[in-house]
Image (cartoon, rainbow, N blue to C red; front, side, top):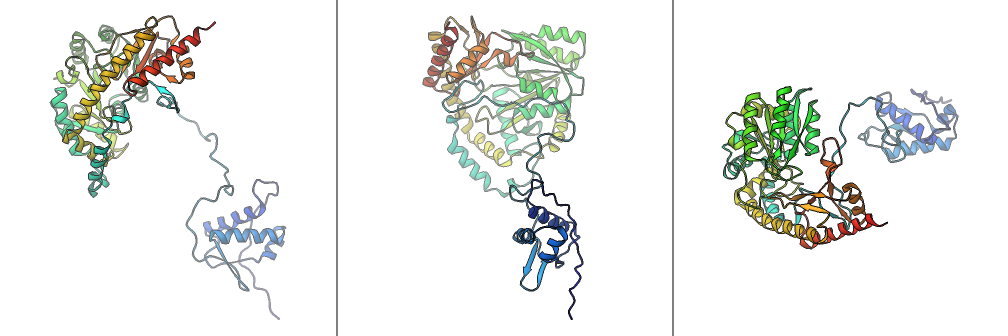
Length: 493
């Protein structure tokens, strides 16, 4: 008489008939979990379907369905007359098919506390048919795409660029950037005096994390650039707003602040102040440098929109006249070419630069080496210079077209002073709430920024900021027409 062999394993699973998952899935999960834990090893026999059904108190068809599921996933093998065994070749761990996971989705909330943090910064929406006038956004149609593609192909043909690299950035790019800064900014620097980053925002963030300690006071322009404020604030620094006027930052107000308490740094956009577009007056520039020397205060100079200057010669950066080592100079190629091509740079004295490089190495290891090689190629060949000259001519024409359109349709509402450079204008509004106007304009298919967005305390400011670089003359005229329609909508009884 034959005896039934004793199976070495008994399944232990708490089945929940009222649960979200079918019983056969619950059984399959229990078996595969034991295989993953090593309780069941490759080649081990499994109970027959009838016996397991009896042990678990379920219908045999439920067990058969569980075994079919396990076999389809590669956990078990079944052979006629031999039985069912753990597969000798187990599957690689892979996510289960949708609807079969124990977790039905990412939890809505974490099971732990979060540290305080800022809201994210997102560019203006670009819905279909919307005419957007964001300040500081270039016309992507002007990008020398064919030349850029060729430069990328040449970069991708270099296998060395696909490995890890210097956290300071590709030496080819640092070399041509140093040459460009010497020729156009009057900055006497070499390739070892700068770091290449993924945009000027990253450069500022790295400098802030290197320079600032919790509780340090940092003076900032008001109105000003909120993403920069948040990068500074994330270090634990305390920001103090300093008013701006027609001559840029009120340096006398900064001097008064310095008389009251130590100031670790001042963040400033002196060439084309963001958002007002004014240039820091010559006397204030000298006064600011003197204050920095006297108080050992760092000047974080963001050379915003330096390339796009339309009248006279562009003013040289503060860093060009800084012999004491007070200025940390930050610039970008992203505004020159396209925001999606993230290339920024920072020039600083060596002790600070070495620390910035160290922080970068633990943040990002290195940048996009193929992009950096392509950018170096375009700079060295003169393609970037030709692009800047072409874009400057077109942006000047668009600035004038926007000023003319505003004078024709909104002369009594907006007081406009044409900016000497940059890609946007700052206009004072009369007799209308800019925020209400912007909401009405959005309904008419045109978007623009208002003064409140740039106020340190989000106070209502009677200003709007209108970018002119991203639309051609026809598009700008249509945008102003829609703005006028939105204003008429607001004034309807």
